[in-house]
Length: 247
Ligand code: OAD
Image (tube, rainbow, N blue to C red; front, side, top):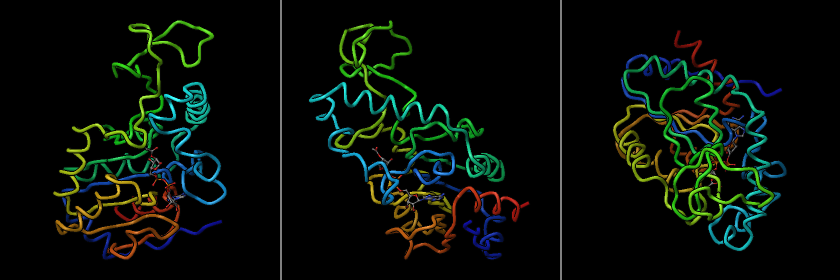
């Protein structure tokens, strides 16, 4: 079993003094809930599936059934998953700071399930469905053998409300995430390989604005060398430990 790294006292002391904290989470945060990450060798989704065939508007135009079914499979995994101690600790941590912005690349809604109040979802939410033509969120549609099912308003294919490669992120959410990164005193980057922009730019925006950077990840990433603190362990162990140290 992986041991949680020691939380440096200096970090705990700085956290006791700050008001503004921003957190960016990625797939690793949900790994301990049984949801596969994307880029890990062997187990990552992108080691078994091709993003070009499943997560682009072109893939959906070419084979909407394949894309819909792959997301239906992932939606089922997400529906069965429960928040892990890392998600729960983040929801608690939020209460300790006057300003706490939780930004996620995850589409699984587990932060909200764990009790986090306001979550900036940069890549959408797999549990939501929208019309592929008009973009409006659709809550209900009639049972039909058609895959994907048609939009009840205009008949176009329905699709998951997630951001695919080559698509823009929701602008207001991204603006708020960038503002939080630029103004925070401490920035946590947790469970992300830090390679997909613009999310991957956020810790570097925080660095340029003088924030203390804390990375929580068992593996090194392009951010590791620039981080002030690297807690190289699973977030489901490190975050509860951090919360205990702050108590
Ligand atoms: P990745 O799969 O690229 O990276 C997951 C990271 O989590 C890796 O750096 C792992 O080392 C780390 N990790 C694994 N288990 C962990 C644990 N228990 N605790 C902490 N860290 C752990 O996932 P993301 O960085 O989230 O986008 O990927 C970014 C985006 O690329 C995703 O949102 C998705 C994907 O393509 C879209 O689908 C648009």
